Image (cartoon, rainbow, N blue to C red; front, side, top):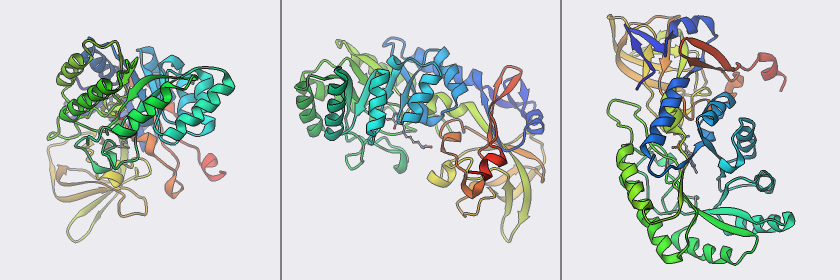
Length: 409
Ligand code: LLP
């Protein structure tokens, strides 16, 4: 189900013409469909209804507090990786008992807060981190629940820069180190080893890497004989960014997980980000100039790589859609670029596009995940507004940063 689509050649988010919004709000801005967000969450939760997982939304993919509040209302927990994300998730109303704290470099301050707030699990990634948590838990005279992140040596068939499950990556512990650490933790009175966690990467569209991961976890369970209360399978479920790319087959994935969990008393945790929020937003931008050069036309947008990093960082494909599609076609090479002073500030190259002119607006698609959350003030450009649509209603859920705020800091 798509809540963001062309209707009679006009791009709409739910019941709203995007053209109308573009005239009302200063561009560039992010625009979210709340119905899409809810639909995606429910799709995931229905697909896995047999195992009733705890779905911890990965806050790094999008940390807007209004969106977190909406997710909380429909039952989401949170996967956080910093003190900021933890506080935000709690502020959004998410109960600490539904929060997992991940990350390889948790500081003492972060661990203390996680313990104080009584999060469900701290997923540790090294022996030294275990020692530090143990020391702090003694001070608190408490027993702290931890999970250990396994590096299963399974790569996710995804972009090199977003793959985390290979043996040379910094994440998790190798099979051998994992087993040794389990033995050590079992002897520690203040630590309660409750979970095993994995996350092999992001934007994974095939279930075969997940199948491999499940079999490595089974080996670990056989070897350690530990009845983990929680098996945290991370996130990584991929979405469709282009016609060529299919989103992950959740039915197949769920089948594997159902089989895997049979005869176990464990509860499954997922940490999805992109699957829930990825296709729930577009970035609206205005064409400032069209500049002809020898062999191509540069369409210079008012959105830049500081607003949306993914194309510059990973060569990521994001479709660009005119807000009003007309039948006249512009042929010839078009390069959509931003105003930032970097040659990598480039969004997309097209060989044909609906005819456009300066002052027109376009939408960059599927930018809900790792869009706003990766944005920056590079070139001293303000962070942009976020607008949320529900049905025929629209509201600002984050204001554009003011120039005063930008300039005085
Ligand atoms: N859990 C852990 C431990 C993670 O490291 C991540 C993402 C997730 C869950 C959520 O993964 P998702 O379901 O969203 O795939 N900036 C990159 C993606 C980096 C992902 C980092 N970790 C991008 O724009 O593609």
